[in-house]
Each structure stands twice: as structure tokens, then as C-alpha cells.
Image 1: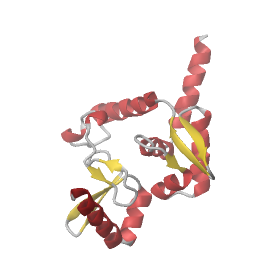
Image 2 (image 1 turned 135 degrees about the vertical axis):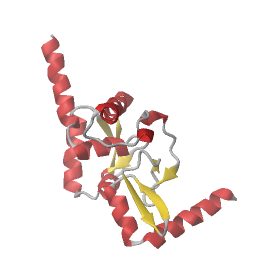
Image 3 (image 1 turned 180 degrees about the horizontal axis):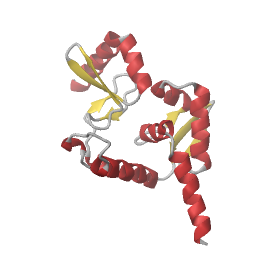
Length: 171
């Protein structure tokens, strides 16, 4: 009986044993996203993202539902996020190969989202952002490489859009 359970665990670990799939899980942490949104955020080809999502879906790590022509993905069980967070926390705390500052050695769920990715609007904090980029003396936080690359191509577009949005919220 335990052999069956161990095999199922192995399959889930195999599905999660890919940095792109872990990044997808991270992107789906607080939101539902379409394949298009995910591949734009990750700067990966649509076919690669679809393959990764299929692997995650086969192991019931993500769920999908259709909205018109779009397929929207979300995390199927919050326990998968807890599992990924626990492994990340163990690595930060115990792995000598990683050179993290002490301020990163806190539980990820205790971090408050302080910023928004200027490109996609995803909530990130200085600790959970996938990428940080300095532009004109100011740090900007991005969820994934695709958003960072879009920002680098047209930073003024995203900065001005962010200021307009901020001004509207203050009124």
C-alpha cells in the first residue's frame, strides 16, 4: 500500500522538479492566469508553457477552466504552495551553497506584498520578486523574466502607466 503512495509522491516531485514549473506555481500563487499571460511573464514559448502546464495538470497541481476561448489556470490545492515554500525555506536556512542574507531567512508566507510588477500588476515584495531591476536610481520588482524584458524595452511606458494608476488610487 505504501509503495503506491510513494509512487504517487514520486510523480508529484517529478512534476515539480523543474524550475520553469516552480516559477509557474509561484506565478499562480495569488491569481488565476491564462497560458498567454504565463508565457509572457516567463518569456518562454507558448508551446513550452503549455507542456509545463500539462505536466502540472496531470498531477493535479493546477486546475484549468475555460472562459470563452481562453483556458485559465490556478493552483488546485494550497498545500502545493506550502510544500514549495517549505522546501525553499529549508534551502535558505540550511544549504551552504546559497549565500542569502539573514533577512531572507524568514518564512515566505510572512512576507507582505509591498510592490506590484509594473508590467503585469502581480503583487510581489522585495523578497518574493523573481527579478529586481534598477532604473534611474529606483528599484523595480518583477515576477518573472518576461515582465522584466518588456520593462527594459519600454520603461517609460510602464513607469508612466504606474504613476497614472497611483494618482487615480489616491483620489
